[in-house]
Length: 94
Image 1 (tube, rainbow, N blue to C red):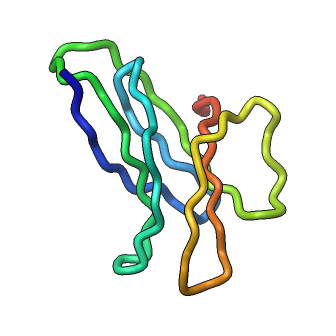
Image 2: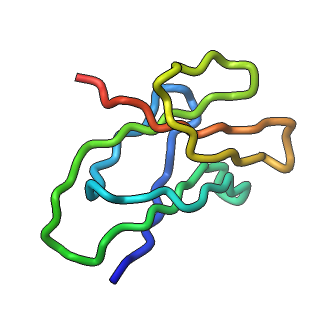
């Protein structure tokens, strides 16, 4: 069995670290204008006891430099401002 969880991701360029099961998979992302927040929806196993790891997601705007090793997750658009948010998974710090 699987479960879908929603997590907020910072758009300020600092990145967001989220502890997720090892085999969790980002399925969707969207910028919600109601609360001016970017969210990712992640599919995780329903088992309570599973291996977890710290994963880091970083938002890049159009034209920003993106590390070669970063893995693309998706793009969300602010429909009221001319802004697109490109979410990548990058190696955790530390």
